[in-house]
Length: 62
Image (cartoon, rainbow, N blue to C red; front, side, top):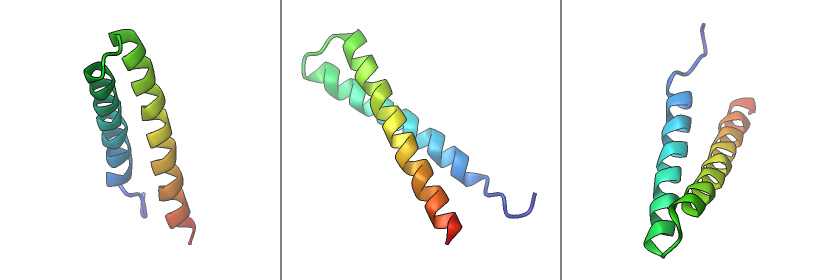
């Protein structure tokens, strides 16, 4: 278990959930329906999680 960083998965989940909430609230604020805003928030959450994961793994390879 040496070399395992406990904070990386926590930050990954936290960033994904905050992105989902922020994008969903902004879309609703600009007049979108709740379902469409939730779908766009989910897509933004997945993109943010992929970007953060690739940055974490790229920094670990060096």
